[in-house]
Structure formats: structure tokens, C-alpha cells
Image (cartoon, rainbow, N blue to C red; front, side, top):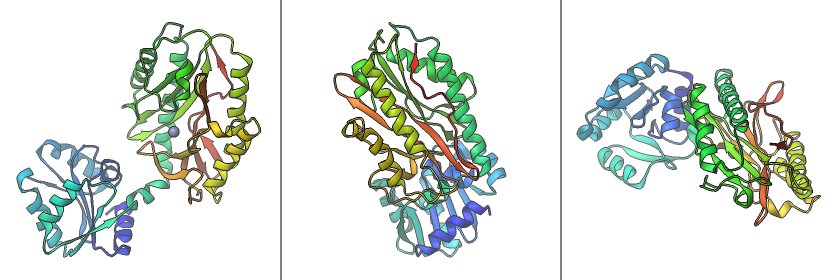
Length: 359
Ligand code: ZN
């Protein structure tokens, strides 16, 4: 059984269970190398099992060559009974399940299928904790995700003209990521032009980009399952003094916070450092979200870099730094990179220039 499954089993045991049932996509992939959208990974002392139905059997067997999982093809109507047989054969009386990932209906069906012999034990963030520390092999994939993102962004930037809609820009960007071999966008691309820039998570609209706009683009490719996260704001035509000043403030906040990234740093302190910088420009109250988050198989994962975070940064973390300033009626600026906390210090996985881009 692979090291990841062994570690997951030890954590489930520490939580008072004898086995762990994983049905969420990223966690299931992490343990079994199986990409499909449905299936159950079962981690027991008797081994790592992957239960899938007919639709995924072939893909699961291929993944199993990598992960060492034992594949069981299940018949959907008899899924509950087959799961129960497997769990009982492994001598499991208490089965841990992902409390934050199961739906209520999913939990009900599971509980019904296993009752009364097997009791369900809720666990939180168990596989997520393992996923937090990235291996060198994972970093190699995340570097590729970042490289493709930066290249696609640079390519599309060269095509932006007044009159291009936000949606056209997003579509072109996602196409360029795929053309370079990415599976697609890791999350829906954000394009926020002109006054729409004051919405941190704006969905691309039909608005045409105009001369004089600041345009914020937040994008990331998915590469072999792993995500990148990059944000830049560019000016269309000569920026005003106010636009330059706001960009300079966000850039200063970015630089100050990125300079605090190191194993042992308290995430809340790194966030505070960015806010202190914006305070000097009188803009701290216009930075209404956390400084950053972990990235990996999902675009938002542990740790969290926010004011309320209790997390302490550690070697092997991959985190974003993304200060922003949002002014209703005016627009906004955000700068974001994904960093790996490696043995030689922080490494930007999305290496693109951070000065104000002027088109
Ligand atoms: Zn982000």
C-alpha cells in the first residue's frame, strides 16, 4: 500500500476508526491516482480498495498500476451491499467518512447500507492535511501549470484591443491554456474591466474593454490535476495618476507580504503585513478579502492566509499571495502569484512581471 494511504489510515485510526471511506474527487485521486468523477476509495488495514462501476472500470485499473489500489467493479444497485461486504471482511466496525465532503443524502445512504454492524465516524480535513505538503513530483507538475498559465496570459495580452469583450478575453485565455496541453482552466477565469474591477470575483461579461480601463484577469491552468493561480491588472492606454498610485500600493503590499513567506511564519502575520502597507496609502479598508490560500489539486486548499487564520506556514506549502484594492465606481487592482515554500526559500510558480502592464 502506498505511503499516502498508510498515512491516511494512521490519521483515521487516531480519530477512532479502523478504516476510511473517501468519495470526494481530489482526495480520491490523491490516494488512488484515479481521475474519474465517481467512485469510492476505501483505506483499510487489509489494503487500499477502489470501488467503481462499469463506466470507470478500465480507467480505475490503469490508475491502480500507479497507486497499487485493488479495484473492485461494483454494480450500482448493489453498491451498498458490496461496500458493506468489503468493510466487514476487513474487520471494520468504525468507518471514518469525510464530514465536509459528503452530502446529507450521501451520508444517509452510506449509514443505511452499513447499519447496524458498522458505525460511521465523521472526520474533517484528514486527506487535505496530507495534501498540504507537496512532494518534488507534485511541484514539478505545479511548475508546469504555472508555466502554461503565464505563457497563455502573455499570448492573449498581445491580442487585447479596445472593443474586445471580457468574455472573448476569457475564452481566448482558456483556449491558449488548452493548446499548450493543459486539461483546461482550473477555475472559471475572472475578467473585470473598468468599473467592474471593484468586484473581486467578477464573472466575465459582454462589456467591451475601453481605452482608459484597468482590467484585472485572474486565471490558472490545470495540469495533470494540479492548479495554478495568477492575477494581473493591466491598463489599456496611458494610465491616470490615480490608477498608477493604486497599482503601486498593491504592488508594495504584495512585495511586503511575499517577503514574509517562510516556514514558521504565522499566516495571519503575513496577511497583516500586506494590510499595513495598504494602510500607508489609506487603502486598507478597500482590501476586503484574505491575503491568500493554499493551492494544489484544488485551487483553494490548506493553509489559509487570512486575518483569522491559525495556520503556521511550513516547508512544502504552496500558497498564493493576492492583495487587492477595490473602489466602487473606479475599479480595482489585484496582483497574485502562487509560491512554493521550498528548501531554498519561496519560489514563484507563476513567474510573470508584476509591474503595471500598459497596453
Ligand atoms: Zn487565488
